[in-house]
Length: 543
Image (cartoon, rainbow, N blue to C red):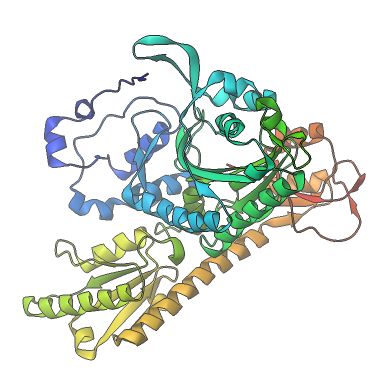
């Protein structure tokens, strides 16, 4: 059965003259562009009108003045996504088009995680995007949690469907349907799979990369013979995410357990990694769920154990999404634009050749090409910007906006001295520039690798210092309210009720982000009730 979707032809969205002149999606000036981008992800469902009086793309970088982070963090964020060419808005409210550079960051995330998933015994596969609505209804808390976000298909092939279909919000239900057919004996366990897919959740308030109507993610699903194995798996996968955040994305996440109120619909326990963004809001960057037997009982997913007894399997699910790209932007970016950790940067080094006289051009370009080949041989991701349609200054600004960690400049004098000039993205101005670095292959390769490692460590250290300086230890509800009002995270002992937790959310806008795995020693007293508490919790406003 074919489900049809009718959208207006793209040619109807733009005037013929503009479409011919500008073969890529056109924008208004920076201020109006930001308004369009923001509106597209929050209110309107139609494509905004395109202003014919758009500047030539030749001059666009000069017009890309990024709103200062301290002035308007949300406007800054949208400016960076636009100017760094990470994403654009789709024709349907709340959707986005991930552009090549933004998708390359997602591919870097995929490349790392795919290796780790396979090292831990998981295999990739794919489940259908359309799920019978009756599947969603089988697990009571699951349907209750997801009902407001479901997108439903009711007509296919011009006829009303006998049963409406859910466009995948997550896959626990259809996974269990299939697991029931594949699992029969303890010999079939553990069953551990992962899929890279798109997900649809009808969000009312959206933000590119962070919360969109449709997004990309990976979701792992496993089935085990015992509760202990499932718990070990859930913890193992949150550790994989934690290591990725620290070692690749240079984001110092706080790993821990969600409160009962914040636990995934249908899970027994949810583990999370929480990241502090540049505006000090929390971002849930990845989750791992111990599902217990909730879904296996709802779907009858059973196996015969070694004693010949029928048992329900114990399960987990875990996921990270393109939300991580948003987290990288908001953790490391500055007023100049994007700033990427080298290990996930699509381009680690950009080479900008510089010449004024025609007789110098060939020599400079040959030297730049040679340097590029030397670095590529060492496994470094290099871009040679040898276009003669832009000035060197334009190129410097452009690649800084796109967050490339290192820039190499080569001019006639450098060719003569067999050296290069190197600038760091994370250290602006003269402080980040080094002259006279030798072109000798082994020396240059070693120097660049060392600098990339330094930048990776520097970004993590900077983000860690920022996080730690904005977490406040509190011992009372009044202290918590003060900390939250100042935009900080509040950390304090907690053993109060779910109702008390909801009261905090209602009165402060903050939620329990997690009970961190790393807990302080000693006697604790709940900040809300004064009763004994075994754990501290972290409260914060979040995305």
